[in-house]
Image (cartoon, rainbow, N blue to C red; front, side, top):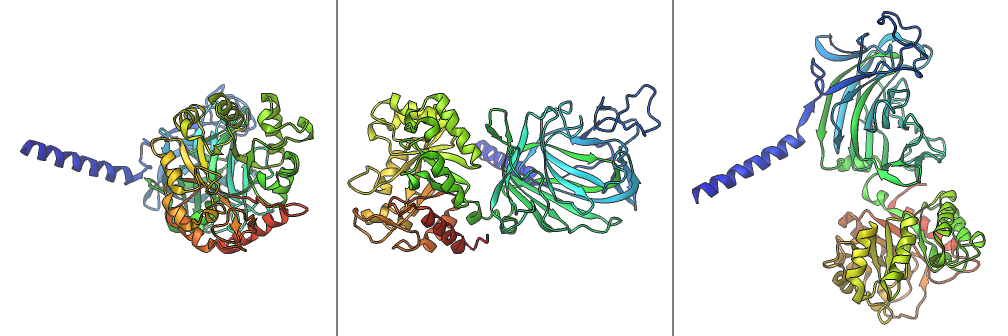
Length: 548
């Protein structure tokens, strides 16, 4: 008994020590640069003092020095009585961590030296913090700067976000950020796609908070999952979310970790106080200051069924006109003239590919689709195939009770989540949150898509419904209704009916919901529901204090 007690205490102490070590601050600068390795690029033709026969070039193209640093571009020196990292800038290069990091707070201070070097003699002095780096040095941009994200360090632009592709220009980092039309990060701007095939590549920080060039400037990078925040001298200047790598087939893999690299890029500079600390999340105050707080991270879109009397190209055009970014498709809609107005569920793989091109060209993201399935597993497989080819993240549906196990397994095979939707009592087996919970139990791929406008038809208060589904909500259909307990009623514009939306959003915030909110209208306004959708977007933004 005593042995077991001692063993338990020992295990507990070991666990606590592991937790403390995991979150402790690690100082990454020592005399041996033991956390890092050097990689140097192509010496410019103006560089002297290199070993005989060293290939030279324009500083960007040619044979890199690689692991050799004959000019001591990176070295630890004593400056004003403290150990600092000196970067000569004479040759483009990167001091790269030996290991990958994720979910961390990275901190350093920098200041400029006096020397500048070709080919950037007449350019603003430049260095940078690169992170989430992936790939190899050989396939790096200019044979130096690995593919990933950069927190720019440069005169009057420190804190810019730069997305660095690989040398072969075959892989591209992408992300989302609040960006205004001047390509500047703006807390009050709408979320936009960044990276390849967009109008927004490298993004400017919101304001210049740098110290004088002879003084130290503090830089902080917080990153958790696919999100990140940059601070310059304690001021939030940039934030992003949903970082990923875009592949040639247009699929995106999440970018949440990687190596860290400090740049040498044509200017003499110094780094000090280089530290990293694991974090369980980006601090809440920074999320709020960066526009990453919960109300702002909900993905607002429109269910295309709202425009179901139109064909797909027309539906997409209306979604775009409403200023929305996300759409939910539905397989029983018309695919449009280019596809002979075929029903989407009847399209061939080639037809689905053309449909995906239509969505991409519209600049929209279809991350969910409503499917009807059928009575056989083959019918469900057919629509799961469509969903997979469209690269959605989940399907919305009402699966037959006798097929729960089969559809859950199918979702696992396809790597898709199933969001169970509710109609009203008498029409749907899922009219009550309790029946949705019954389906979710024991089925790891099942989630909930709460249709707020249908619940009141069955006498259910949406806030109470949301409370019951806490922890299982993947998405919402945002609609309103004029009265309770009347299944015959058509929905009304959001904010004009009986649903208490301030209470709904407060409950979602309490739950830390971070999913999709899809505006939907069942009723058909003339000439279309576009005006209602635009009014709903305005109502939503005003209610949450989001400025546009």
